[in-house]
Length: 162
Length: 162
DNA sequence: TCATTTCCCACGAAAACCCATTGTATCCCG
DNA sequence: CGGGATACAATGGGTTTTCGTGGGAAATGA
Image 1 (cartoon, rainbow over the protein chains, first blue to last red):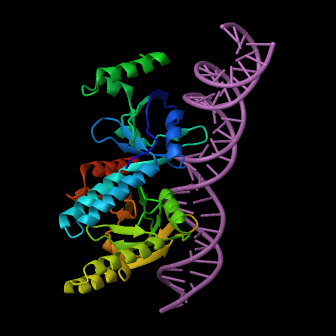
Image 2 (image 1 turned 90 degrees about the vertical axis):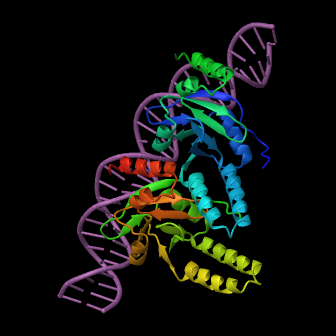
Image 3 (image 1 turned 90 degrees about the horizontal axis):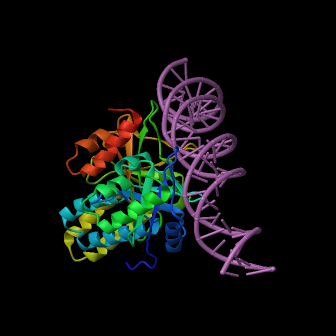
């Protein structure tokens, strides 16, 4: 699982009245170099109050990994249930959304709630995936390094907010 | 067994008075990208009180998978019987139903019973296949992760049901 | 005949599409 | 090196298309 192209960098974009959000061009570049889909997959992050996002090619990799794990323990009945649960979380609890020619997605209402998304979203590249935050929640979280919060504050100032 | 197109996402649709159900467009998209059939295969899920669904092309793959499993345990005398049983389940206990131009199937009465389907059905993508649930049964099942139940509750709210 | 099943059309809401504007970064050429 | 032209990014708004759904007409079969 050595992905050639990694997500990096940060950006602060607006959510408009219709719920549309521009995916930063530098993230779209990585998605389109990894595969030729103009689509992102959204999921609730397992640890932080934000969303986790990646491209469909990465989702397929993740799935293949699970499958191989299962075949090793095919006879174990406990493994079967655990496999079912993980598969449900990996696929049923995610949403795949295409972005249009101008690079925007329509933020699905369910993800909007799960990520507590308001009218500004902070994109953070984290290598294999990237995160989508409500910037206010990031600033409040004690687990986030101060240096990263500085970046968030800078992006907010840049835009003239708070 | 690396399927290119995977089922993912969730949706809650109605079963109307005639027993018709819309297959969500995002699932139909995967079916039609995997092969050109406008048809789904329904079966009772092996572990959960719901239905398992997939496209005809996947049924062939599943058969190959069973064969491979048999060859692996050729020396085991129980394996032959088990293979026969699984093969029966995989093919005899399934129904293939086409969907019409507006994407609806007519839920077969036997499957309706086996899946305990009432007037609302929850679709859950699980990668290679997808599941069709009576949402009330999902909420009652202790094996289902809480995060997934949240999604079911959200879909119910979205529609204005309890 | 009566009861299904299949086909067709209709509607409201939501999503996808198209075009326009603004600001910023990049390029080119004197 | 400066300054204008150019390209692209992010965003706003209007229009068209699709989706899920209901209901009725036509076809089928006991």
